[in-house]
Image 1 (cartoon, rainbow, N blue to C red):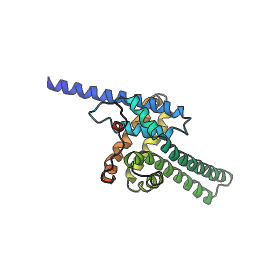
Image 2 (cartoon, helix red, strand yellow):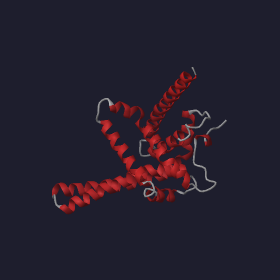
Image 3 (cartoon, helix red, strand yellow):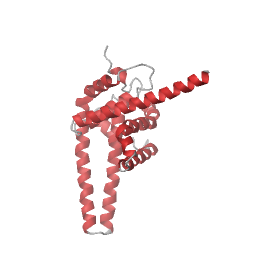
Image 4 (cartoon, rainbow, N blue to C red):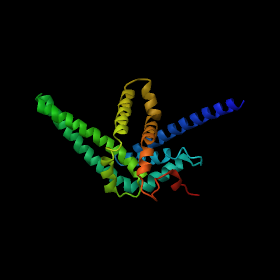
Length: 224
């Protein structure tokens, strides 16, 4: 029956997509570890975004080879971005720790206010880092300074999506501490997270892309 063929086709497509996410998850983890995390995490995430946003295309492309090409073609420029976010992240982390110690030693209202304000800044920083990876992909015409600027500025435009992204991250942390769910986290969470965030941001960012600017996709990195 035609219905059976359609149903079977949808099941096959779903599991093929799931398989691709698992493979991409492992590739991203390997590349992140290979670069000692601080030198490769942002580059690995950007390469993952490029590949995932291209999966919906009917055109075939080899996952591993294209991922490697996307990673290394953007590596040097992304490294400069990642070092900026690393330094800023260390400053904010120390800032939060400083106010946490102050709150522990002297539990007064002003210390609590500064501590929770520091936590709020940390959350904004995390969102801006994630957003910077997507801004880099969707607005390839921007220089690094503008990528940094818009990674913060555009959070106002995607406020609802940003709150949902925080919810997903919180869910991921919960999964790490649950015996069965942490297996799912290891096998698929990173690539699934990027896929969901891309779904949330794609339509809005494509509307903001300047005329003539083409967001990065896998087919830019395929070599015959």
